[in-house]
Image (cartoon, rainbow, N blue to C red; front, side):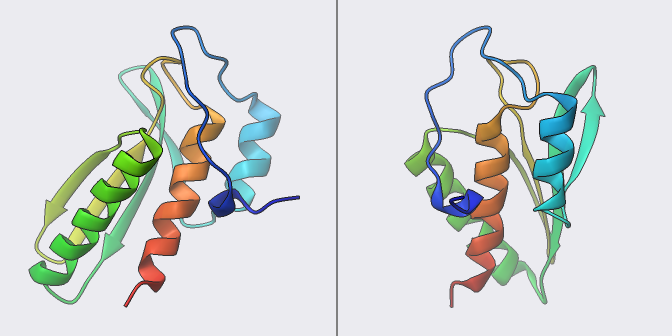
Length: 114
């Protein structure tokens, strides 16, 4: 099976299918630093990344933004001193779609960029 970070997002549409509970559990098992959270009734993937300073957090934020544009799938990104919180979810599905897990895995890969 192809690793999540090697896959591409598929175009979502209104009513796109959410992942099932079993799929979510299996996919989350491959992303141990991410958690599924509920935000106003919409399930989202969230991870908090920490950095030594604001400049490193800012650079990471820029890389996440570039990833989002490349995949045409856009997260919520919160930048603070030494911290970046990223939340992925599919607006059209009003919850979690496989695209969110793909993008979470790709976000993790950004930590390996020098």
